[in-house]
Image 1 (cartoon, one colour):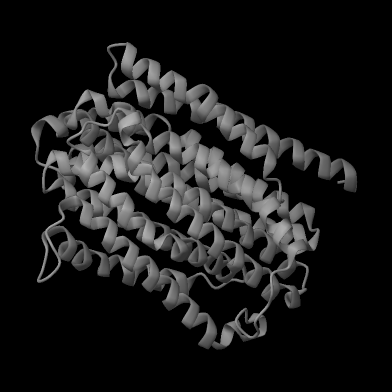
Image 2: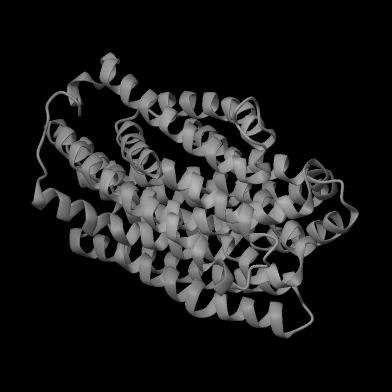
Length: 434
C-alpha cells in the first residue's frame, strides 16, 4: 500500500499545487480553476478508470502462475488507452462551449475554457500511463511509478510558474496556465515510465514492448467489459464531488473558492483509502487467481480494519488543524471562514468513504464491477446530486447543502457496497464448502 500511497499523494498533489498557486493570484483565478477542474477530473478519471481493468487482469494471471499472458493484456490495454485518450481529449475540447449552460458566470468562462482546451492535450498520455501503471503495480513493482510521480510533482511548480506568469514568448495566462503545464507533465510521465519498463531487468519476463501486437478483439472486449463499469463507477463518485463547484458557481466567487479548498483538502486525504483500495484489488486479484478463498477473505477483513484506523486518524487531524490547513491555500478572510466551516462536513464522511472505497477495491479484485457501477450511480447521481442541488440552491444552506448531499450519497454507497461484498463472499463459502 505505501508505495501506492506515495504515488497517489504525488498525483493528487498536482491539483493541490494548481489550487494553491491559483489561490494566491485571486479568488477569481481560484474559482476559474475550480470550474475547469470540476469538468476535467470526472472526464479524466472516467477514461483512466477504465484502464484500471489492467490491474485485476494482470493480478489474476500472476496469481494463477501464468505470466505468459501478461504482455498481451498490457499491449491490448495500451491500444484501448490510446483510443480512449483521444476521445477524452475531444470531449474536453467541446466542454468549454457548454459552460454557459451550466450557469457559470461570464467572468470565469475565459480562463476555465483555456484550462480545459490546454489540459485536453495530455489526455492520451494520461490513459496510456494508467495502463502501464496498472501493469507495474499488479506484478509487484509500484516503486518506479512512485519515483516518476514524485519527480513530476517537483517539476510541476516551475512549469506552472512559467505558464501562469509568462516567460519570454510564453504569455501570462494566469490560472489557465496550469492546464498547459499539466498536459506537458503527463506526456513526460508516460514516456519516462514506458522507457523504464523497456529497459529495466525486472520487466523482461513480461516485457510488453518486446513485439508489436495487432488489436485482439476478444481480449479488447474482455478488458472493456471489466474496465468500463470501473471507469463509470469512479466517474459517478468523483463527478458528484467535482461538479459541486459548478452547482455553487451562481453563489459567487467566495463560495466557489471556499468549496474548492475544502474539496482539495479532502481529495488529498482520500488518497489514503484509495491507495488501500488499490492494494486490496491487487491482493484480492492474486488470491482470486490462485482460488485461495480463505486468504482472499482474510485480506479483505484486514483491509477494512486498516481503513477504519486511517479514517479515525484523518478525522482527528482535520479537526485539530482545519484553520492551519485552510491558511495554506488563501489569506482571504471571507474564503477562509467558509472553507473552515465546510471542512467540518468533510470530517463527517471520512469513515463511510474509507469503507465504501475499500469494499469497491475488493470487489474489483474479484472482477465484480457491474454491481458497484449501478450502486454508485444510484447513490451519487440519483440520490446525492438532486439532494445537493435542492439544499444548495433552494434553501438557506448554500454550499453546505452540496456537502450534505455528499454525506447522504456516501452513506448509501457504503452500506450497499459492503453488503454486496459480504454476499459475494458468502456465495464463495457455500460453493466451496468453507
